Structures are given as structure tokens and as C-alpha cells.
Length: 104
Image (cartoon, rainbow, N blue to C red; front, side, top):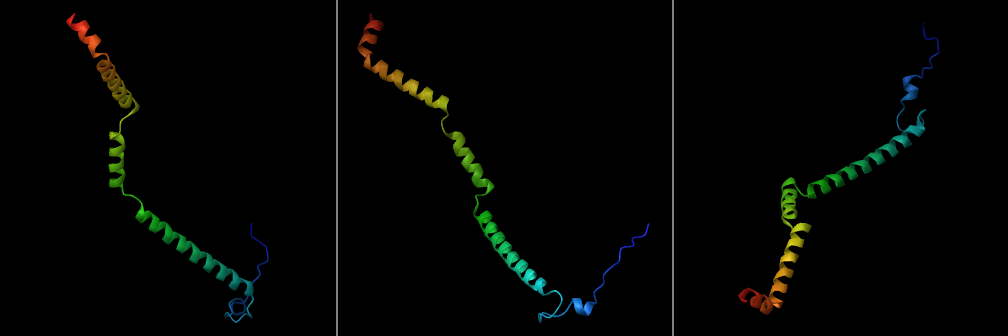
């Protein structure tokens, strides 16, 4: 089946005139200018993102941080330390009674 739709052709001289404003694509210059401006903003944003990525911590720094966090006491360790401290205080406060019971 042959495509029988008529094709509209514009001569290249009329379609591609210089930027004197007299060509058939006057609005295209404004759109291209807007696209160029948008592209400049995109490039600026990309440069900012690159700068932020360069300032971000490296994998080695993250590894050091992970090691420090892992060495922090957990809830179980904190509870054990509190229990031991409480037991020591109770023993010291009742030492006379404990000594009397042990010695008899």
C-alpha cells in the first residue's frame, strides 16, 4: 500500500533564512534562545551537584563512622552497667549487715 498523503515542501532558501527576522521561522529563534537559556541553567545545576558530591564524605570516612557507631554501648550494655553500679551501691550501703551475716 502506497502512502498517498500529499507532502508539503518548503524551499530551503525560504525555510533557512538568517537571523534577520524575515525568515519563515521567526518564533523558532525565540524558542531556541529559551532552550539555550534553560540549558545554561541545567549546566549550572550540574556543576553545583558535582561540587556537592565532591564535598560529600568518602567511603573511608563512612567506614570510620560505622566503626564508631558500632563501638557505642547498646541498650543491653547500658542496662548491664547500670545494674552493676546499682549492685555496688547496695552492697556498700549494707556492708555492715552483709559483714555480720558472713562472719556470723
